[in-house]
Structures are given as C-alpha cells and as structure tokens.
Length: 536
Image (cartoon, rainbow, N blue to C red; front, side):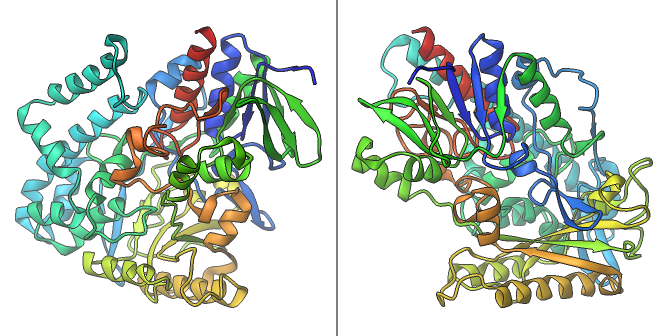
C-alpha cells in the first residue's frame, strides 16, 4: 500500500484545519478526513428549522493565539475582525430586572452600584486582577506543556521558561495565582463581593461545561481558563467574528488548500492502522485504506485510543488512564426559532449593524450562587436538574442572515443534564422534551411573553450531542478542565506533549494541552511536535 501523503489529519474542525495548514506550509503532503459532510467541527452551522440556522456549540468563538495567527498568516486578515457585546454577561435578577456587566469597568461599576456601593468600588481592581492572571495563561497556552520528566539541559529549558513567566507576574500576583488556582469560584467571589447578583453573574464562568457547582475546588481556575483572550475588563465571553460565525473555519480551510492540503468530507475514519508499533495509515468506514507514516487525530482521547486503535498496541496502564478521563458531559442545548425577540428592558435592542444588546452576549437566568449550586446537586446523583442553570443568547443579533428577515434564533444552554442518568432509562424523547419544557419555563419566567414568540424548538441532549458531533459523553471539552486534567496531565499524565505510545500518532484536539476554547492551539502545537520529530 504505497503512501500518497506524508500525514493524515483526522477531523476538520478548528484544530484539524490549523494542524493541516501548519503541516502544509512546512511542505508536507496532507490529507484531512472529516466524518461529516461539511467541515467546521463544533463550529458547524446547521439548519434546525426551515430558514433558521445556528452553531449550537459555538456561542463563544474562543481565543485565537497570536502564535497561530502569525504562523498561518491570519494577522489582519479581512473577515477575522472581532466584535464584542456591550454586556459580556448579564444575569436575570428577577422578572424584568437584569444586571449587565460591561467590559467597560466604569460602566460595569455603575450597574453594580445599584446593588452594592462597596462592590462597585472593588470591581475595577477585581477585573484587572482576573485579566492579569488570565494573561499568564495566555503565555502558557502558546507553548507545549512542560515536560516534568525532563532530564537534559535542552529539555529543562521549557520548565525554566514557565518559572520565569510565573515570576514575571511579581511576588503578589504570583502568590495570588497559586492561591486562586485550587479555590472554588464561590470562595473567590465571597472574598471580594457582598452582592448576590454580582457573584451569580461571575460564577457562571467557573462552571461552564463542568459537572461541578461553584462550591467545588478548581472552579476558580476554570473561570480563568475561559477568560483567556477576553477583552480587558470582561469576565465572560470573547466576542465573535464580525463577518460570519464560520469566518475562522473558512479562512483556515482556504489557507490549507492554498498549501496543497487535500480535504475529504463525508469520510469517517474507522481505525488507525498500526504495524510494528508504528502508524501505517488509516482505514475508512467504507473499507478503503490510505497509507501514511504519520496520523494526527483531533478526535477526543477516548474516541482516538479506545475507538480507532486496536488495544493490542497500547499498554494496559495507558488504556486504564484513558478510561479514567473525566468527560462527564452535562450540558444540553435547546434551539428556538422565534418570530421576534421578547421585549425586556432593552435586552434585545440593537442589531449586528449597530451595537447589539445583551442578548448578543450571554444572559444567565440563575440569580444566585446558591441556585447555581442546587442545579449542580442533581447531576451529582445522575438526575436532571428540575431548575437547570440556563444561559441564552441570540446569534441573529450578531448575524441576521441566520434567520429570515425580522425573525430570530435563540440558543439556550442548560446545565445540569448529565449524560449518564441514575435510573438507567437514558435520554429518550420524553426525557428530552421534559428538559426543553423546563428550559422554556425558565426563559418565560425571566422574559415574560417569550413562549408566544416560539415558532419551533429543537432540544439536543448530551447523547444527541455525542452522536451528532462524535463527542464522548457529549463533552465538547474533550475532557473537563479540572486541575488533574490540564498541562502535562492532559490527556493523561506522562503523555501531555502530543506524541502518543504509537510511533507516528499524535493527538491535537481539545483533549490535548491547552484544551478547549483555544482556537487551533492544540492542533498547532501538535503539528509543531510532528514536524520536530520528523526532522529528528
């Protein structure tokens, strides 16, 4: 079986296309294989009702690391300009009453003053501190994770570089970073603020895509992770592409093709071929075999090692470690086609052509940290929250073309809806509809009149998300962002630098460092590792 390609990339999402582009620019012949009929991965836009479209898992476009932008020639590229909402996060305090936190710290402080003058005075210092701590992660996320098994001088340099970056924070901020990392986001917020609506607004970022509540340790770090790349003063969200929701995907795909990369959609990989402990190519679901000495997978670690590889080629201890990865999908999505947005104190004011209102960002319907914790409690026991934590946004305020003229799309994310349910019944249609009813009721309570605007709705349970996007347990994170699953422990301890136990096989999806929300970061770093190994 002669090899027609130097490398094969599995998956045509952001990481797969970035990796392919990096390899193509280096002169390799590259084939990208995508199981779905169109590229885009988790950012894929789909029609869920006639004329209504959405990207259910891409409400936040993520952070594009400068090293990736420069490396792929995307700096200053037309169509990749970003826009940001007037309110990064808004919380529904009571029916018709909202607290909106603008990235402009002065405006945010004035909004907070209604609830606490003391908190308003403390807000600028808090927002600045979060920005500095997240800035350290920005530097860390543009380099491979440190190699804790380093022995030679050359291998120790990255560890020294990490120590220098940490030391550059200064004594106070360095101490604060190490102190905050293992904290619960609730403890962090109680140190700073007395206002419950303010705490509730910020705490949502610490539990995003986690099957944990705000009282759990490490959720303060999760808050910082999701703030990497956010504009100064923001405590949630990183904006969106002005041109189109898939502007980044389109730009990277076009760049990859210019460098000779071949992209095949509708070509699901059934297994990675291995001979003598080394990659030999891939076999498609059709039975077709394609030879290559290097394969870079952007599927999640479980799909890659437990689904694509014959276990005979992997050490039992490694397989055991992969099986212990916490995916724990706990978020469901409900998509609404609306004849109009509800009127609620200007939440829906503006348009993509002007300055969009808060619904263009994230609106949380959970008014207290206690309510957020109670919503998480049910998931601990394998139950769906009776009063789920719901966040809503209207992408048609960013891109009106996603719906017919005058109509709108509203996307609701609901936590906590665990993938594994304690009663063993699974996610059947009645269970899915019951969750959608609870989400609709929560929106109606905060935005009276909402239900009368609904033309059509589609609910996606974690199992639906798993099947539609090929995600283990419906986890868009490829493995939760917890302290035991970051840096050199991502995906598993000892294999956190993109290479795998099989020679020629690399992992470059969100299950590798630096994780989800970093556009193309894992794919870029995995491609650099592949190229470095090839040169050696």
